[in-house]
Structures are given as structure tokens and as C-alpha cells.
Image (tube, rainbow, N blue to C red; front, top):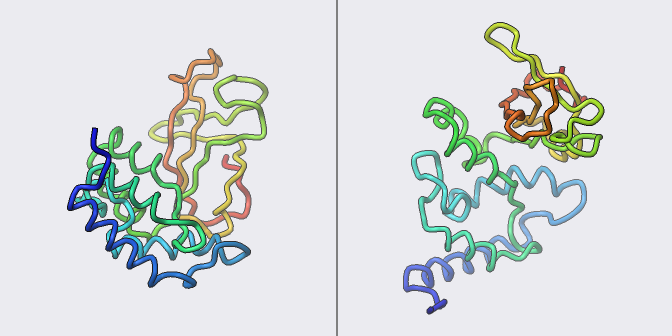
Length: 198
């Protein structure tokens, strides 16, 4: 098997190296300024074609083979590159499981950078799937769900995020089955300082 770059991959790698050289020193890599840069840094990366490389073009990605993601990771040392938010779980999840209305509504803003999203996964208790203590739950109320619980490790909360992907148990029998866990897109507007949702 030949692991060398194809001509197209080599050209992409060279273009990326040149762009990263131009970006050196423009983005903070630590301290209080680092987290806001996870938002602002997405836009130049996306505009240059180096963010969302394997994600669908119709939603703001580049629609390239996954090997181009590998090239971006190989060539982008943290002291040089703009900070990149972790959006793979959102983009891939919505791409595979969301309907077209949801994809058109949310994916472009996630990929191109004007929207900020956070994961609502971790909890103060051992595991959401374990059913122990008081995991975050969601109960249907007519056409809506009421979510009740706590989420932690939401590092971008101070940046007033647009929304969150919240995991919650929708079966109160706590059968310890991940099929009893649902994902909810939760608007963070109006913004609240608390991570708790009710």
C-alpha cells in the first residue's frame, strides 16, 4: 500500500502549509483569549478551505475525502493553527440522523463559524446511561419536551453559545440501555449563566 500523497493531496498540503505560515502568531494558544478564538478562528479556516474538509459542501464543508482531515491534523500544530471547535459529533450526527430541515437550519452556521455550540453530555454523576441518582431526563409535554437535569464541562458557556446538543433519558424506568437516551437541540437564547436546564 502506498501511503504517499497523491498529487491533489500534496497540493492541498502545500497550500495548507503556506496558509499556516501566514497565520502564525495571529491567534492565541492559551489564556483567557484562547476560548473566544475557538469561535473566531473557525471563520478564516473555513474561508480558506481548511475547516470541515470532509463535511458536505451543501452545508458549508469542502466535501473532500477523509484523508484531507488527516492532512489538516498532521500539518496544524497547536502553537500555529487557529483553535478549532470540536463539532464533529454535531455535524456527523445531524448529517446522518437529522432531517433536511434540521441540516439546512443548523449545519451552515456550525461549519462556517457564526454560531457557537456546546455539548450537553457530561453530568455530575458517574454515567448518564447508568440510571444512577438523578440523570438528566426529558419528558414529553404535548408537542414539546421538558428537560430537567444538570450538565458540566461546558467550556464555551461563557461565550454565550447559540445552542447545545443535550443528551437526556426519555425512559424513566432506567433500564441502563442507551436506546433510552435521546439527543435534543436546545437553544441557549436567552442566554443564562447556569448550565442547568429545566
